[in-house]
Amino acid sequence: MFSTADTIVAIATPPGRGGIGVVRLSGPEAHAIARTLVTTDAPLEPRHATFTKIRSATRLLDHAVVTLFPAPRSYTGDDVVELSTHGSPVVLQAIVAAAVANGARLAEPGEFTLRAFLNDRLDLPQAEAVADLIEAVTPLQARTAFDQLEGTLTDRIVEIDAALFDLIARLEASVDFPEEGYHFVEPSALLDALDGLLRATSSLLAEGRRGRLIREGLHVAIVGKPNVGKSSLFNALAGSERAIVTAVPGTTRDLVTETVDIKGLRVTLVDSAGIRATDDPVESIGVVLARKAMEVADVVLVVVDGSLPLDDADAAILRETCQRRRVVVANKSDIARGLSGSYLPISARSGAGLDVLRDAIERTLDDDAVSESPAITNLRHLSLVERADQALARARNAIAERGMSLSEEFVLADLQAARESFEEISGRRAPEDVLAHIFSRFCIGK
Image (cartoon, rainbow, N blue to C red; front, side, top):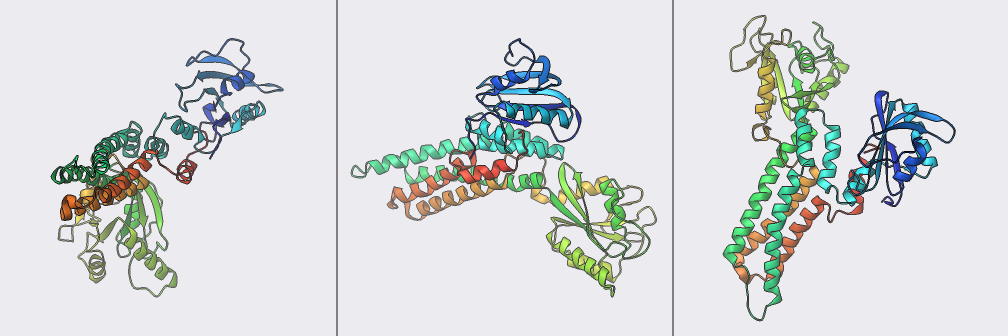
């Protein structure tokens, strides 16, 4: 992938101007290159902030606070030097250029964290959690990513892997003494052990389904006939006037989206055209898009006019969505209660009932509703746990059917396949192209 013998440099703070900007160096020559950039003759003491000036070959660039983190007690496991200066992009880029002129190489995306992984400072799930933490947009996403950075998933995988390793070792011992007829694990004990492993993988898979909602978010499509207040509700939930609201039916022709935080979940709201029969070719396209949005949504938010009785158009939409996860709201509750039934009364205009609506959206997720931070959220991890679970199930079913008349080699093949999946999660067996893909999604400087 990348050479770990190079010393790399990058701006570690986000693009744009700020009070402080940080340039990070990492590698065997990080300390030496940093010495060429600072004006102080005093040594850079480990983990001690040193106030100095930064220079290029031709001029002074800025004041800075410089901190040395010697290997192996650094983020990457190599020597690391961080130079904190004023957050001007011009100044930061000049410092990077000066570092490159003195022997550093520009870092690739994620290369600092990749080095932390290669130097055993982080395992692969923890490295992936770094990217998730940076990208978090809700408090629940941030909490879940931090828990994984702290090793919650790693601890669970290590526990399962240890039990699996013990089982494999005993079966391999049985294979090594075929003539003596020794069985280092009896069929009943083997079944019990596999049942325990399957319970552990099933628990992770159940958490993974909830975890993907946290990490990837969900789509909520707001649908209904024209003029029931869909766009007003969209704006109220989004907290801004994103969609055009008028008294003219059919104002919304295209899909309008906004990402919001609902009960800690990242939710993409989709406002759509009013669903009705129309001869207007543009509005007809909008109705088609509304139905497509409804088909792919995780939750459908059906809006009816709570000040009037249901009509045929309302009834048709309710029938169309009856097999989907949905919340039905009766808007305009501030005007009148002309609608009977168990529909949730709200007012997009006044905001009445919106907190109850947010709770209802979360409850609609049923077993996917999230109250605690799950150990697993990443699709890569989830697919590998599914693969391990299937291998364990094959082994368990084969033993249940044939007992130890089934050769240990056949059981071992499935157990080893399961263990390989867990090793790919942790990174002990991850192919180089997988690592390249994972770290390519990181920002430069992390």
